[in-house]
Image 1 (cartoon, rainbow, N blue to C red):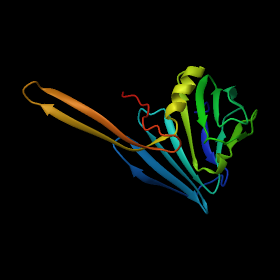
Image 2: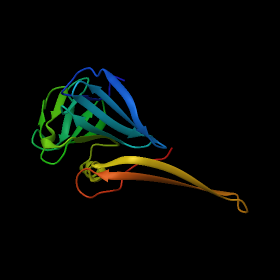
Image 3: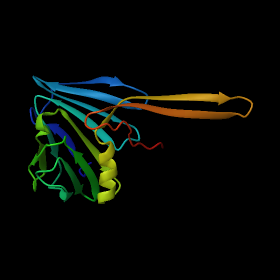
Length: 179
């Protein structure tokens, strides 16, 4: 709805081609392209993160109005923002900075990198932001669900596995919820 944010691209305002680039059991990756600009976005059921990779531009995050910034500033890679009582974290790479603070459009300069992530947060506390930042650069690349059935006890055991790549740091975990 009108209370969300949009993950956009500084290289183009309109992608001429969008395709599914890959999928796994509960994640999907789309690639949108126009000329030399592309945006690869990965997201999945139960994950608070959207992972983005940029070619030919940088993240342009748009809101219906200027969000309240409760953590970070133009010179920090991570921002905690609130719009219409919904809390988000914007995770630029180490060394990246922001332009557009105080407006409805925030642009991250990526500091020579090509990755970026956004998370929806349950609240706007420093502790929550720190926990989500811990996993923000651990991009999910595959998900797989498996089952075993023990006939004598009629027990079904379900295992949910994910594969990640650390875009920054060495964290390989992630946060997700089953529902």
